[in-house]
Length: 335
Image 1 (cartoon, rainbow, N blue to C red):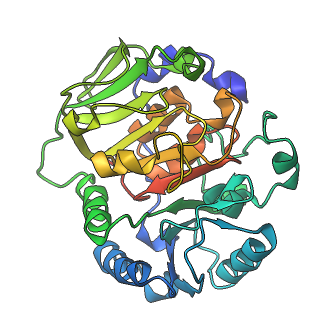
Image 2 (image 1 turned 90 degrees about the vertical axis):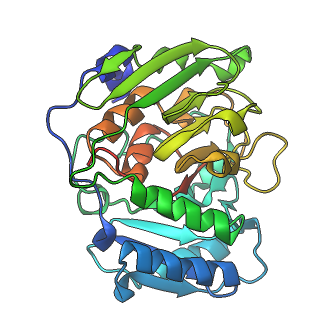
C-alpha cells in the first residue's frame, strides 16, 4: 500500500473522477454538557451546518481533563457509538480537552480503537490504517471506520470563525474560484524533513487555479492565498504574516504538536489561530516515522479530488495512532 505514495510527482496531475465528499447528513457532533463552551459552540455548529437533531450526541466529561484513561475512554466511545445511526460516517467532538487517550490522540483512539501495543512501544512504526490513500467508498460503510475530528474551543470567537471558514470554503454557484497556493518547506531542522521526499512537484494546476511551491526555508513570510502549508519545525515563525484561504490545511512535522494545551513545541492549535481550517499533530513521541504524519502528496491529491478536510487528512496518514485531527471537518473547496 505504501508504494502508492512513492511517486510524489504524480499528484501534480488533476484527478479524473471527482468525489462527492462527506456532508452534514453523514456527520454526528458530540457535545460535552459539562463544558459550557462545548454546549454553546455545538449549537452554533448544528445550526450553521444543518446537523439533524438525531445526529447530536450529548455526553458528560467533567473537569476538562487533557487525557482520559483507556477504560474511561472506552466507556465514552461505546456511549457515543450506541447513539449513532448506520449512516454516520464521521464524528466531530466539540471541545479542546480531552485530546488524548494514553499515548494516542483522542481522534485516533475513537476511530481505530485504543491500541495498547502501540502505547507499549510508541517508537515503533505503528499499525497501518485501512483508510490510508483510500481510492473511494465511505469510511464507515466500506472500511468500518468512523472518522473523527476535534473542533477546539480556545475561545468561542475563534471557534465561530473556524466554522465560518469551513462553510466559506465550499464552492458557490456563480462565484469564481480564487487563485490559491500550496507551500511545502524543507527547513534547517533536518530530522523534521522526513516527508520532504513526498512533496508534490512545483507547478501550476490550471483546473484548480492552484500553484504548488517547494521552498528551502524555515518559514513563509507574507504569503497570501495559502491553501496548504506543510513544513517540519518544532516552532513555526511568522504565522501572523500568512494569509490563509477558507478551507486551508496546515501542519508541521514535530513530535508534540498534538499536545494541544501543554506542549514544549508549537501546538497544532496555532495553525487554526492563524487562519487555517484543519490541522494534525501527534500527542506522543513518534520517533520520526513519516508514516505517522500527513503525506503531502496523498493529502493534496484527495483534497483536489473533492474530499472533505476530515477525509483527506485521514487518508493522508498511514499510521495515525498517535495523532489528533483538529479543525472543521466538512471544508471541501474542490467538491
